[in-house]
Length: 402
Image (cartoon, rainbow, N blue to C red; front, side, top):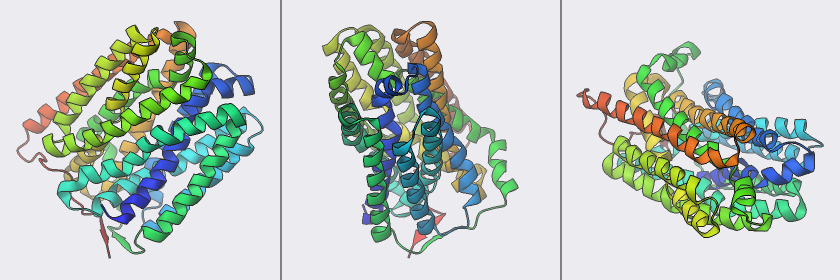
């Protein structure tokens, strides 16, 4: 893999840390700011909404900017957002900081996916995307547990200061390794780009993404309080469990990318969604036993993010066929769908916690994930009826390095 791809991975690591570290800090932030667990959980939802807005809208508005300049600008915005979180005097400012950071996140992964596929041969597209997104999984392995540890011992504000430093490092890596001249197809008009939303087959992919991640985040958003209040772990042990989860995610991410390359995205996604639903159902039973809980969390990590590469490759494949003048925007809308699912899952999880309790988030999440499996199966059947359906990972028509 080229060094430019690793520069993207470092940026993804920084972004992944700030996105997911909040999960380990929810009890700490709630206690410090005097808000409820569901209110603290809204920091996950509102960040995700920032991503959902930023991905399609800002991707369209910045379509004519040079890719490298845009990439550096996004990481600068990301750094400023985390500095604002560090300085936040209260809950409202922290919310604003999270939304601002989410805006940068959305555009980064929209353009990052297409840049990544442009750097490798087409038969390695899913693996290239998986490599870039491995920055998220490495963040879960190291950034999130370390950020949780920092937040518990030095205060949650110190965590965001550390993440801002990661943003600076990511900017330096991108400035050094990403090629200066990244050619890309001039974007279509805004109206033409909005035409993506008229394509039923693309909307189906977005639904698969949103429902699948929504189901998982119903439970994942409240993993830390679940570990403390149901399983009985001390707060100091939460970071270690998050570390175990992250290690498992790292393996699952690579496995998911290879599975999508080998079987094609639909077959891979069917397997991953089925396993994810099963694990969440098991979690409902094992949450009260510390050892069984850790084993279940390990299994959860192995499938939780394994569908990222398959979903991204699949949406680009479909966009190349049904909306070829707006593939970047179609990719950005899938990032929006990821985060709409996360926002909805975190919000729904908060409602469940308020109404019937933490213990019910896993099995309800499992039912939602089964909905994503049904949508994936439907999309696969529609492909089977179409003689021109894509059979290989997405090509790289949009970006070429010089």
